Image (cartoon, rainbow, N blue to C red):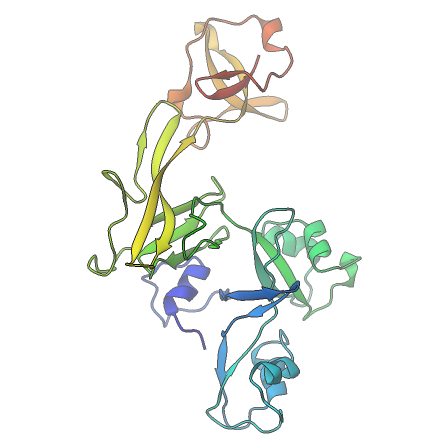
Length: 325
């Protein structure tokens, strides 16, 4: 039993307007809280399953939950002394194994994945934006060829960073690329994008303003941005929520450099001005909307060809731009 239709939509990156009758994506991602202790973890109080006529714990474990859990685990979590004696209508907590461990020193969202027939570790890694070596290490597999159909894998999904306060209720909020989550009593929607790898949080549309306190940074509302220079932007970023004395949504100003990066400086035609780009193979590509904005161009005096070919100087900064001269 999944308690929230919205939670399913968020975990699978579907619009909140998606009706319950819409076809489910394959595979269907279900976000569950993980409780870890002593290096082991299991989902906490969710998911739940209500016993139907003819059910057995073994059938529930193998069939309904695809072998992600054993009937012994279900019996232990629900204090069932005799697995053969369960009552119709009885609600069970299914403790699916999970992990809270970082991978490579970075926080991740651990995705429990059942390998389909004909799949390969390299293909699974490519599908979920990780590496074959990472999947092998996390799952303690010595050889990618040992993967078998139906095997349960822990696939770590890179999570976006955030500015959430350590004192906030949702301080451990982790969102992987291609999905979003509703937090702060559904008042805030936070998505993750691989372009910045930072949480992008906005007030949830369609939620009554009377139920959600305003989140502002001075006169700037949550999620709004402003340009402070040609290369810097200031944003009112989500910092979590508290409920100690009253329900409060926290926000603070953050500044980011949209032009920062390891850039090549190359002549821009005969005018002698320069533009910033990144090397791609043997050529150079200008960083436009996705990197250095057009406003980042600098009108500098012409540099000599030998100077342009000189060594990398990563410590040189001009208006916040790292470049090579």
